[in-house]
Image 1 (cartoon, rainbow, N blue to C red):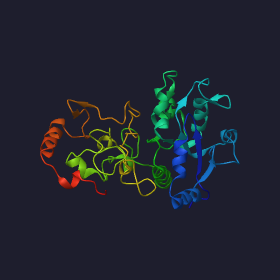
Image 2: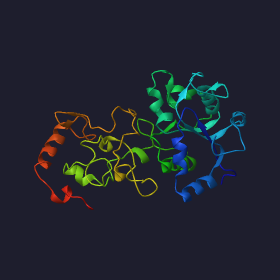
Image 3: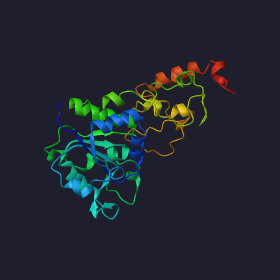
Image 4: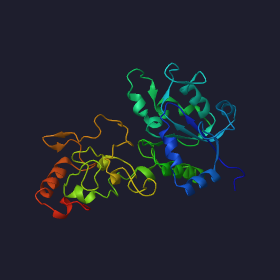
Length: 295
């Protein structure tokens, strides 16, 4: 049995704090278990006893959780007159595990789109992990804007218990990102029969006009529900593909088409097969699906 709680440092770089808000929206019992199981020794918004300078003097850290994109440009963004890259490198030397929390920490996210600074990157892109001898595992990317709070908790608990976890090609945990957002979507019957829906409505599929990326986005949003009850698509919001590397794209609430056919078809489905199935489904009209469930 371990004699002490594993330490966690939450480092914020260029961020909107969305992933911190997400963490705080975890179910109360899960958040309590997390705080009882780990020692959150530093978070710029949640802890008061320790400063970042104190953390930089420590010999080691068990878990380094990074929120936000990283830049070496001090004029663009700095903390205590130091660049976010310099601070990240110092913290990384001490960490046993590094977890990029959110799409900005993983790939640069929305900040990487700024044309004024081309030096904004994700954690893995900007540091050389070969230099860090304390590191016991490759960097884990928890993508999402924001990332689901349960994904954060499951990842730290899994690494703490088993020391390893299986990652996909984008360094995301397979357990959380093997499925598509489409799996578990309550609108799948509308998708199958090609019944279109509108933004904010409970009926209809959001894939054909509203830009929904559920059929090609790796995410367990519709299997591990937000606040235990809902997801974007269940609330009438199209999936915007925020867990994928190309996020954010332009015109995310619009389905890009060619001659009325979506340019991107469901992941792994040959376009010819998709078009054949679509053509057949559209020859039928299912009255039940074309009526409102509730007037």
